[in-house]
Image 1 (cartoon, rainbow, N blue to C red):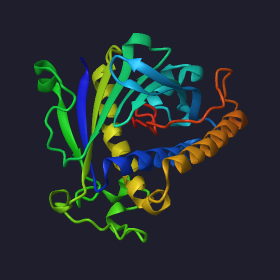
Image 2: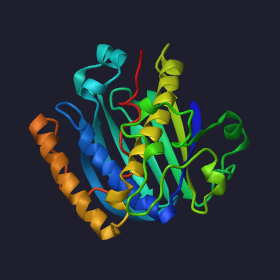
Image 3: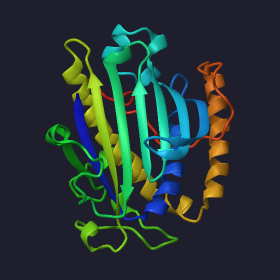
Image 4: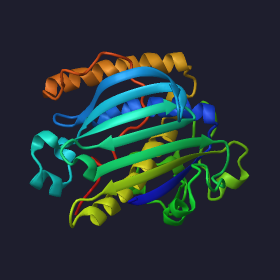
Length: 282
């Protein structure tokens, strides 16, 4: 087992609100982060049933092209053609699982993200049902986007200053999670395995730091865009997903990154930025 990090992301939302908020936000981030040599390519999107772990839900398969966002050391030692990640996701909300791998590194590299969403304030101690050895190795990190200790530079917009015109929510102070009646926690277990000789520990450490930064960035944007998604129905969200998918496909074609496997289906977004492709190595 490599690095095992559990992020507990606290938000003033209901579990039901988070589902549409996440789908909407990740779609917008995918569009924002797709450039001339970077982006998300959707290969499969299909319903699954009778899965031993999740029962039923939505399965997606993607290629995440790192391009110019690839870590400097990776760009120096790897062919450009392999500076991408394969991502498989099983979304059975409120439970989800995502696996990211690299074709070139094979079994030497793997990121597994298991997520559960609960209507509590982050006090459930073993939602992922880990064994004793895993619990001993696990590190827990609370993500509170409204905390004064968080650097403003993490966010595109500052969620501490946001106030929703439609709901009146916003400008939460320290300790809000103990006083608000509506609070939920996204329990995200990130397992990082990298057995690259001489680099494994360093890579795992940097990816862990990136996971934390992405959690702040994504959920900060989610709150600051509340007035854009709060009145949407799930049907509305699906229509927006179709539009996002079409725009992503066009960007992939224009950039020359689109593969033969890509299919024109609606995307059921579970994750936004790839943790590995967004990792900063200095």
